[in-house]
Length: 458
Image (cartoon, rainbow, N blue to C red):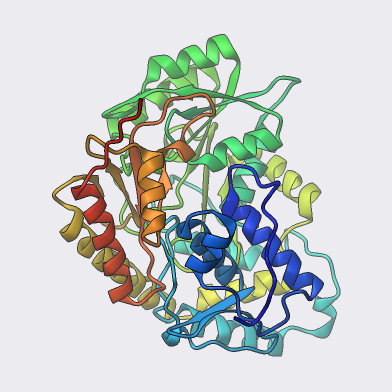
């Protein structure tokens, strides 16, 4: 072992893996763990700290993704060298991260590298010194408009698009534009993307849960929330609910749109996860004056650029653009030019198709192993929803998977704070690890599903 360092978790709360990751970061920053220093093996450190090996593995995985640590087959885990260039083909993660979708690299990195070089060579020196403005990013907005050409978003032009630093930033901008008064409120489905709640908290807005049935959010419940609790904005993902993979039916979308038009309810439609054809119209199309469409490049191409966008109702574009300008002035000129070069590359459509095909291959492989259980999935959606068999609770299943080196998301992460979570987990496709390692992790999940561990205590 390359160091005598031992972390202190005596003040750690419930998220011990985060506390351990913080300890390692601090030790690296302070020089206690120097570049190249070897960390203790997962099981050894877990024993020293009286925590599970999965907790240590999760902290190591998080820091490996951040670039703080690096790991290799048979070599152990080390603090990353300042000039280190690790060959991804040598990497064999000690933990398999299936918490969030991770795209395979089927050419995006090469396209992005070319875009960086082209931008650096072509941009005048003066443009590296100026603040951005909305006129400057119009070519990128036009490229994004062409990218969205086949989507059922309704009538809009590049002038209706406002750029942001990822979809989460875009939905924050929409909330800041729409919400009014001292006690604003938003509505979300009872089981939904937690980023809606986080954005609401930052905007000091109350969050009201809306139950759903097989067709989507229940209209009567949403109308009551508007009339009785002052909800101004409904945040939803009509094409694919995260985490349940369900879509709001076309009929239900029309019913919600009619109600929204009657009551003046704004609807934010977050469309980040579908990488293929859509099932029905977006609320931006169905309620033109009240529907806001949000998406990004993260799930279809690459999350590294951190470029998202919102399509606003035409009469409110200037408000949304002003919110973005007040928040961060707009995307920097180098970032928008790199993204424009990337989006304009004639190879991009082929790369996106290859990425989609690889994700769907991994989905089919996963369902081949898990199909005997209660799994909800769909092609072109890079995650699946697993309802656990009797004997498993979500929290205990996630902990058991961690001990096997597989990280999943519990249903508890998708419900409102005081709501009751179903006994289910979300498994996301990881296209960035060796296929054999991915399949081995899926098999471990299946073995847990096949062998529920109901515990009795007195």
